[in-house]
Amino acid sequence: QVQLAESGGGLAQAGGSLRLSCAASLRSFSMYAMAWFRQTPGKEREFVALTSWGGGTTMYADSVKGRFTISRDNAKNTVALEMNSLKPEDTAVYYCAAGPLGHMVGRDFGDYEYWGQGTQVTVSS
Image (cartoon, rainbow, N blue to C red):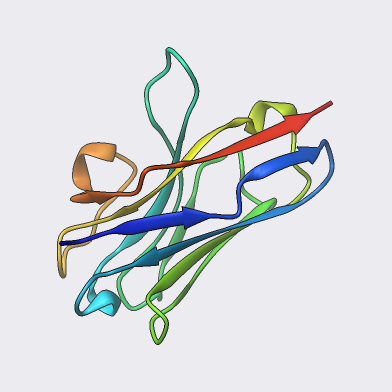
């Protein structure tokens, strides 16, 4: 059974940093595009960042570009999201997602096959 387990969420002050991690129980992990999304109550799940399978391509939402960095460690089956210069509007539940094996995916949450349970990030002003 595939599992994606996020960790590292919590409370930070505006201007601070947090690092999220996602551990994936996926065979051939390197062949999955991985992404982070976030969601606040009453809103649709929002794309944050992705890394292509193989890690050669990354993509970011405009709202986080220059502040967040996505990275993957294929040897450890993990993907991380380094979040710097946090803002109160970054407050959300953050989800790790994996695309179908060997497929390129984009910003649409419908593209992704597997999801974690989410981790809460709260940024105080």
